[in-house]
Length: 398
Image (cartoon, rainbow, N blue to C red; front, top):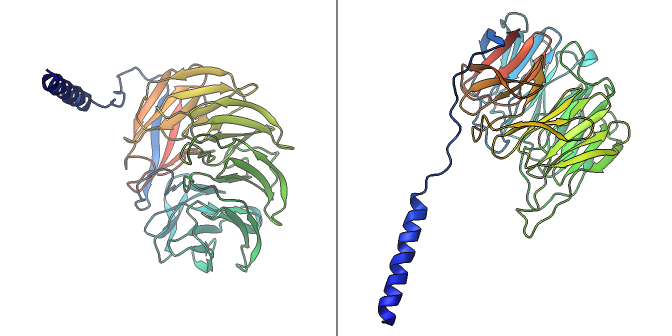
C-alpha cells in the first residue's frame, strides 16, 4: 500500500512538473491596426555604421547635436558629422579602435569638438574639422557616453569615479570618488549637461558649467564641471532587500531637467523629482521602472518592467494614465515632443501616443531595426540612431 502511495505521488509530481513546463511564456503584445491621426515621415536618413546590440544599458549609442549638425558614432570606431537639414555627410573620421558607447559634442568655445571612448579605455578627442586630436588614457574602464561642458570633458568610470579632463590639453582636472555597491547595472547610469535651447529642449536653470550625474547606489550629484565641486548631492533610493541582487538601486540613464525640477528613475524601485536649486525631494512614486524618465511641463513619463508606459503628474507624481498597449515589447526611454510621447520597441517600431491620455497617434517602422540609444529631440525633428547603422530624422504634422 505504501509503495503504491509513493508511486502515485511520484507520478502525480511528474505530471505536475510536465504541466508546468508546458505552460508557454507570456508573449509580447501584438501591434493592432489603427487609423493614424498624426502624420509622421522620415525626412532623411544617413548610413553611419552599425552599433552593438543593446543589453542591460551597455552600448548606448545616441546621436548628439551642435549648431546645424548632427554627430554620431558607430561601434567600429567611425565618427560622423551630418548636416541637420538634409542628412548629407559633412565629414567622417575613423578613430582607430572599437567604441564602447556614443558621442559627446561641445558648444560655445568647444563648438563642434567631439569625444568618444574606445575599448582600450581611452578618451578620444576629435576636432571640429574631423581630425583625431588626442587619445587620453582613462586609468580605468568606462562604458558610458561622456559629456562636454565648456572646455571640460566629464567621464564616469565603472568603479564609480567621475573625472573631468581638459578638452585642449587632455590633462585631468579633477576626480570624484563614491563607494561602489557590490552589484551594479553597468552603463545604466548617465549624465546630462546644458545644451543650447535652439538645438534641443533643456532647462535654462542648469548652468553651462554644470553636470548632473546619476550614480550606482541611488545617488544623484550636481557638479561644477570646471572644478569638480559638488553643488548638491542626494540619495534618490535606498538599497533594501534580503540579498545583493534585491538591493541593486542603480539610477537609470541621464536625469531629466525641465523648469526647476530634476527627475530620475531608480531601477525597478521608484521615480522621483527634486528641486534643481538645492536637491530637495519634491515627491517619490514607487514604480518598477526600467527606463530613463522623459519630462515636460505637465508630466513625467516612464516605462516599467512589463513595458507599460506611465504618465505621472509633474507636481505630485500621481499617475495620470497608464497603458499596456506595448506590453513586453521592450520599450526604450520615452521622450515628449510636440503633442506626443515617443517610444521605440526592440522590434524596430517607433510609436507616438497622446500626451494627454496615452491613445495611439502614429506608428513608424524604422529602417535599421531597433534603436541603439535614446531618441534625441532637435529643432528639426527627432533624431533616431538604429543598431543597423542608420541615422534617421523623423518629422510629424497634425
